[in-house]
Image 1 (spheres, rainbow, N blue to C red):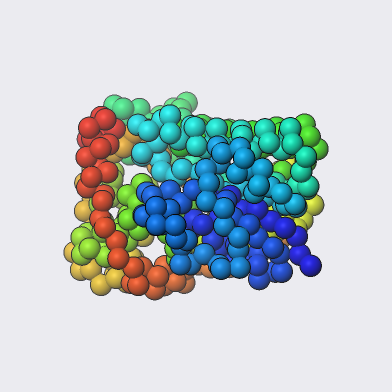
Image 2: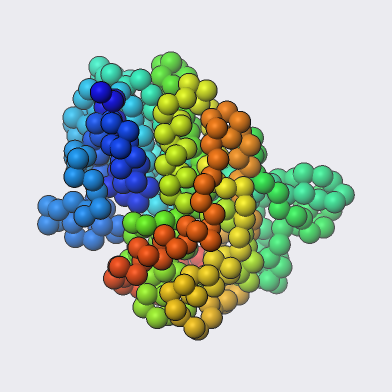
Length: 378
């Protein structure tokens, strides 16, 4: 018989796919999820569970900060996957207390229970994020590899989008970002994800409980919450396209990201659970390839049959970065991870899911909220 596994946030996009994979391997799975209305609509109020959540998984509907619920969720559990988090870079910049309380505070309570209550947990895998890097790694032809901080307001106001060398000011070329790149979070969300990672790793080393932190890059695939305007950009694009509206793109659309299919992220999680080589380590989970945001929007528009081109508006948002994509050599060499799904294949999987959904386009309201807080400029 397999192990007893708890997946916090297991009713969400990535978590539900992980639940499926764990059950398929013969494990017994319990899910702790608060069914946040921003993600799940009215399911919690109606006492329902997501239709896609595997019926073989036990579901406890509760907040991570509910200590008694955590005690019940951790009963007889061997492995914990901690994926529960409030997600959204832009919204985090003005709902600061909520993001820190949910992400940092929820993780702290989980660890406090593990520190002070009897338990059977043998391993903890925490979902971290590439957002903690801020800007990725860059290369200057004169000064070699550099790790610049935020772009200056003056450059952004002048629509000079690319990163300058912090030494000579020459334009830089992006490079794959390794795990040893110093974290430079540029959003409250990123700070809270760094907190989750640091808290778990410090706790694990102190209590000799193996912990693995997986830094997800831009994950995409079926089951993403299309009506949540604070989800990843690719989801907001899909929501607008379903409503026959063109995607709205900040800056010039040539900023790049590493888009990794959810099935590859699940594979990395299973490897982290099964391999002792993962213990007490941090790993990037991406593809090692980058695409421009404009390319992604154009691809989705074509697949969803919207002829109007994306709107490149030339504005910029506080906390946005220019380039970051993964160096996956460590996770490949240590754990044998290799991404299986190229974007050209994975986007078909996403589009098939999107075509079966209805989505309210709330992106204009989200933009208005950002503008009201002075977080959209240009």
